[in-house]
Image (tube, rainbow, N blue to C red):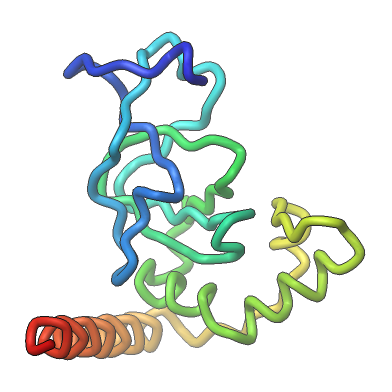
Length: 157
């Protein structure tokens, strides 16, 4: 993919694990772009898509806030039927219970990598969509509060 890296303003956002925020769940910028000719080597993602890291930060979910392209270090979860509240799903997929399921299902391989079959074999219990929305909003507010306090502690050091 290095052959496709560009500084051109019409380049496509190239989403890498380093673009994922340390705090929060939204990917809103990328450090690199690729030329449109590189699109055939990647997968397009759009705002509202959920992506799951499948290697480096194994199993960490993020919500796309921008258009971009992902490589094989990510799995795309696109809720075309609007079955889930995106914020709720992002929090659910990042719970220790889900990470334990990923690790258990990936056991035996030399490197813990996720794939769509492995993620498809996980079991989740989901509430009704209206409850998901309430829970998702609550968890997002809680995350924001934690982030705020972490910043305050960092600034006071």
